[in-house]
Amino acid sequence: MKRDDRMADLIRLMRDGRLHTAAELAAALGVSTRTIWRDMAVMAQTGLPVTGERGLGYILRAPLLLPPTMLTPDEVDALAHGLGRVAAEGGARGRAARSLLTKIATLLPQAGITPPD
Image 1 (tube, rainbow, N blue to C red):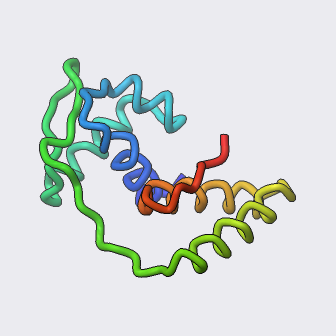
Image 2: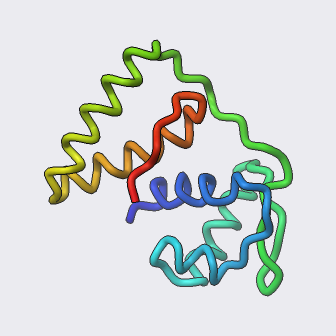
Image 3: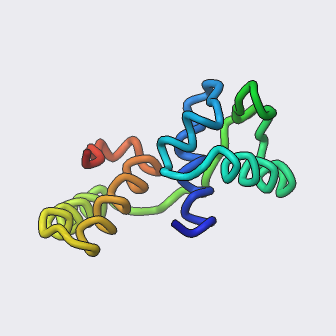
């Protein structure tokens, strides 16, 4: 997994406002706790509102606001429907479609898209 993708996944996981241990985050992302420690240091250095330390856990101090995506309800429906069909096909493209559906559901909770399992 590329670092940028992992960072986006870390932000998605931490947006719930809870304290997360490095071990918990590492297990969720399939990386080592050492990788999480390094990623958290990078996130803090870039100005993201991450607080925490090794042994205690990490938390986003403030809600992270992402730029709005201006899509009509029909566009979101079409996007979700198309991605759902590709996701059902399986393979690398299916995994990518499932990942994208999860990201869209996170970014546009008002759309009511249910992320795939």
